Image 1 (spheres, one colour):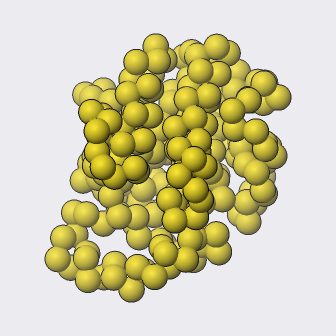
Image 2: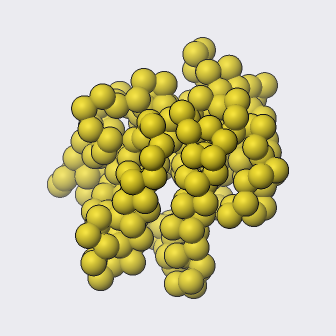
Image 3: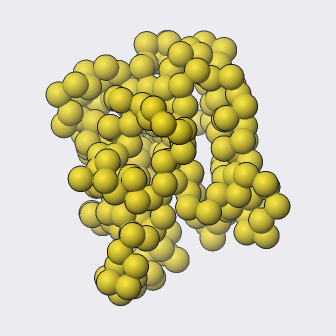
Length: 218
């Protein structure tokens, strides 16, 4: 099996990359990234890609991939509202359109987030845009889609690229996990869950919430 991973240098994507490289059922992992990931493995093919609204240069990789795990994202605190909208929705939409054009049978795993609002009316930009992206994927016509909605992702490893605001909340994770353990998911558990979804799909519904992701990744 061959998979594409976007956002492979981020908190979630880097764990997906590691998990995929260690999985005996995955032959090749294509990291579609702006900058090379720190983790290296013989199974990983790094494809430096700068324009995430145009995937034509990566067409060969898309056509040979069985699944794509969309982990690309950024904290709203790091960019302007316009940039955040482009990264969260426009990039996703462009990738979905390209998959539909060159490989409509690809299994598209979209990493969304807890509370994504498909009514697209939330006052929270994150929830509104994730809901909008989910709607576009659901109505895209792609044959095999899964929407993963993790809640609070607790890092298993330090990530140099983590936003400063996220680093500030690291000390709070043990407290939240004690009060509401169902809200937390470790990054390596999420990575395993996403790889499992990429390999097996999801029969019941196309949306997988945090509690089920925790079970899938055990």
